[in-house]
Length: 88
Image 1 (cartoon, rainbow, N blue to C red):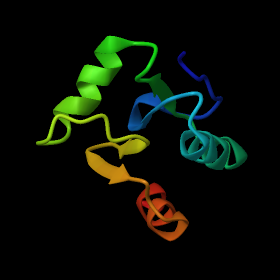
Image 2 (image 1 turned 180 degrees about the vertical axis):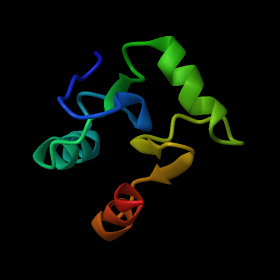
Image 3 (image 1 turned 90 degrees about the horizontal axis):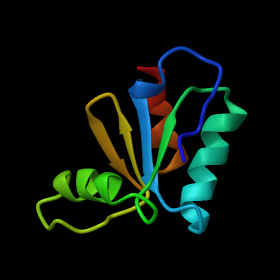
């Protein structure tokens, strides 16, 4: 499922996660509440997304939720850290 939002570039923010995951839902809502454009990549429903996520980690594990803000990888970031990277 690709989430569509109404702001600038959806490719700048990617959320790797699973629809059933409460932490993933937390970050999706966090971004929606701020009207930020993002792409949600459900790693349980799409093997290509799962492989993309695995390639981000040396262990090759599905560490989700993981947010990519441009080239910055954030794994379960605290709100303060997420806000800091979103403001850059």
